Image (tube, rainbow, N blue to C red; front, side):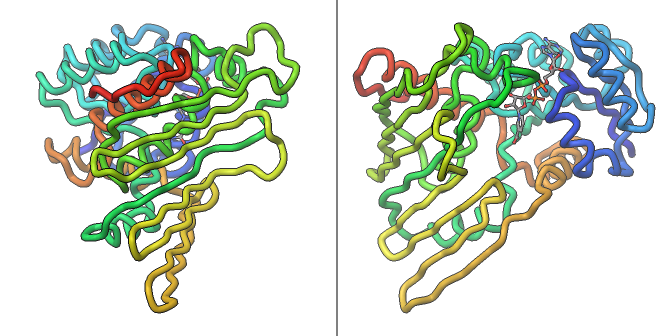
Length: 333
Ligand SMILES: NC(=O)c1ccc[n+]([C@@H]2O[C@H](COP(=O)([O-])OP(=O)(O)OC[C@H]3O[C@@H](n4cnc5c(N)ncnc54)[C@H](O)[C@@H]3O)[C@@H](O)[C@H]2O)c1
């Protein structure tokens, strides 16, 4: 059986999924490419060997192309309507992170997903890495203590493409919600549910254009239900010495993830050390799990569902409220 696949949003991340493997899946049939910018949809169709029809209206695409599953690859501000169209038609969907920029949208979609018992997958690809799986195994039966990490960089050099919407708070939700969401998700995945957040914004570090409305940086303190704690940082104004990282300690263990690939060095008692390099191509792993699940009509190895997407949004929105009010905020979802 071939899975008939359609896409809503045909920008950079759709290109990455295709080129990192999805294009070559023999059990996938591309039936539709939808983007409000028709040129983007045409470009993705070409990338996939000219298979499938081009649309600028998602409703029309779902009704005409009748996909078995849909990839929703939209910027944070555009979520909601596409998911509702999929839910109304009972179509399983893969959605890129973050699943929304506000909690109301994510809650509404989560409710629809649950009501229709839909298969969903969220693009938290790091969960599929060998490094993350190993650390998660080792944490079982150990007490988590503290972690720190995040995404640090110098920010966009030019305000073009994604960087135009990314720097607008009402469009992207800010760096913590949009980018550090990967680390928020790993924090939950490895340490458990988050109870309370206290967040501090950093602003006015660099001259910026008027439309640049996100924080320059932030520090987010998180308390877990099990009593552990984390500090996650984001910065788009520090051009030297940054990168992606996550370091955590359990009572007799340390793990140090570095880089986009999340290579890890694990330290255990008795001077034991384990090093696991991160896979350069990880999108294909999460895509395989999603397609296998759609074919089977039940979960076949999806590691992050819409509920995980909702919880990451809830944490980011609590951090946002804390930055606005200066108070600690309880995470309610
Ligand atoms: N998992 C990852 O590591 C990863 C990496 C990059 C991007 N992403 C996420 O993927 C999402 C999309 O990012 P991108 O880099 O592809 O952005 P992009 O700007 O390159 O592409 C988004 C596309 O969506 C289209 N679009 C906007 N509103 C639409 C609507 N209502 N209907 C149909 N099309 C619409 C735009 O025209 C554009 O072509 C973001 O949330 C981003 O965080 C995830």
